[in-house]
Image 1 (cartoon, rainbow, N blue to C red):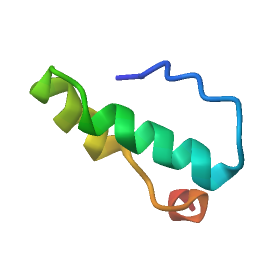
Image 2 (tube, one colour; image 1 turned 90 degrees about the horizontal axis):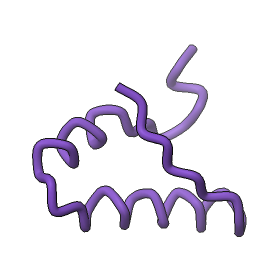
Image 3 (cartoon, one colour; image 1 turned 180 degrees about the vertical axis):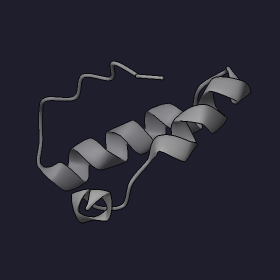
Length: 47
């Protein structure tokens, strides 16, 4: 699943906070749970 959430302003911390807020305020709890599973703390966790 891919969520096309475009956040292009602010620094990395601000963008991360905006995405976190988006996920937390979704009315669709199933989608919110799926997106939560996709969250990574840091890009280094992909390695």
